[in-house]
Image (tube, rainbow, N blue to C red; front, top):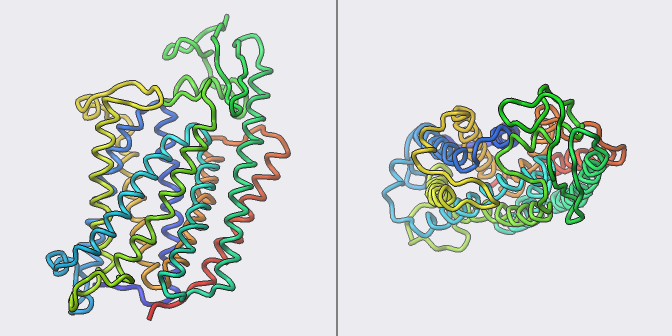
Length: 406
């Protein structure tokens, strides 16, 4: 079994994890904005997410000789370690619920803000729990100022969302002759009342002028609404914020649960039974994540939420549009989580929570691919830069707090 033993190796794992975990949400968002049903996307994603854990377990988990204290994956899979397995599976369940929730929140609040708020809540709650579970191996005088930076980022993220929503509301309010729009005051969402273009129309939608609108304009927002699978016009963005905060609480629990699974701080294993190695724990963690995701998304096919259209298993199987991207998202998330846990086992799970600075990556993709914040106000730009700067400081501080597990 291959183990990360150096602080440098742990930091490399964290940085790779940071990139992977910041990229897969952008892919999922892209598919939703192209009109693919989130149920279809998440089912595809779940398959490769589990496959990534199996690959990690059968490679890193089988490298080297198996010892009684640190057995290889296949050796440990048959041992009597069910108390630890249940903690690992509990972590997978809350992560699955959190990931599934954010898939809907992205449409309402935007990729960047959702990732900022959920990641910050994860650090504020989860990192504090991991610090005490890890027997305080991280330097508290460095760690907790970093946690404070993430807490400030939550406030800045909410302010960015509020300011950007106000900008979009103003754009749509002033939108001229081609569309008639009315504004609603429930959380800064906008309702598209009707489309009355006198010019040529898009042959696919029938209600959007032909040609591509410039990013950041009201026409761009209307075109996006016509294509995406989750319709947000006329709905309060408070729905999105509520989903986002719920997801953040779920995310704050999965790492501490995994920590307990691999280190048995509560002494639930029988005497003589070795602790779960990180690869075995990650396998069971991913199994529970997969099972819950399959069950919930099959239910959502036939009983969709947020007024999404109904679907069927047959329709899902036949929907190959974007399937490759969904598979890629699952691999990125799976390997990202695996690398986070490998680094956490070496340097402490509290320090490994530095990967929660993934909004730095997600915001980059949001700006480059989705043109978020294009043509926004100066206030929004200032808040955005402040939020990202706070994240840069926070990730550096958390990594600097890394310790070494004895």
